[in-house]
Amino acid sequence: MSASFAVNGPLPGRVRLVEVGPRDGLQNEPHTVPLKAKLALIEALAEAGLHFIESGGFVSPKWVPQMADTAEVLSSLKRKPGVSYSVLVPNLQGLELALGCSAREIAVFAAASETFSLRNTNVSIRESLLRLEEVTRQALLAGIRVRGYVSCVMGCPYEGQVDLPAVLRVAEELAAMGCYEISLGDTIGVGTPLQTQALICAVEKRLPLARIAVHFHDTWGQALANILAALAMGVTVIDSSVAGLGGCPYAPGASGNVATEDVLYMLHGMGIETGVNLEKVALAGAEICRVLWQKPASRAAAALLGQMKPKEPAR
Image (cartoon, rainbow, N blue to C red; front, side, top):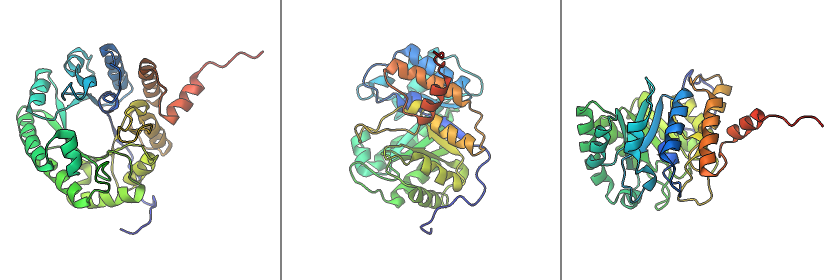
């Protein structure tokens, strides 16, 4: 593709957001997040109009202690009809736990970087995919929907640049397993708009555009620009995290997931429908941040919440 970027064609009229804050956002928190706070967050996000909420993960509590109560979260949730409360599942043991909690959708993940795969899952990319193939097969037999993530699509903290063919191979294999959607994750937030469009241009030659989602971290401040670039290519599914929860562990002090509020403000400002109430999402983010003793990373949330504060009486 040529080295130029412009939004000349029509943008999507509607975009579906996948909220990852309760899982990807909270998993890196250093202090235990109370079950009550997690439930309140998930239920508030559903009430705001989000229909796809990643609510936890059946991963090792030794390595990800914040997800140790995922079974309690799923069993205690006041589920809203029409909302998918997915959970991250890395292996058959995790799938068994998910099935025991009446999960109806799971997410699986594989990296496009060999070193990242070894550091993150202790197995190679090939071994990881073989493991996930069985997880996906068993899930589909049980009537569970499966969504796939590809990590490190634009860069790896250990290897640097990631080869595009590696991304394509992992995405294709996840799709062939039966993942209904493939989320392309810029795990360390190094991508830029032209890279984004080159990536999507390559992937859509292998997979229908309707099966592609994007998952951007904002470590280098490029997430919204990359989302706009993806929209211009026809992508209509975006992962985001309320209040920008989920700092990047490979870039200390840097922000992580793109904030749901910022994405909503941009989309609504362009006339793109989402069915999600920005104000309700901002309030949900403010509440969980109060529990975490931190401020929302979302600029849109900060502006909106500032407007909502009662004004000081005139003296």
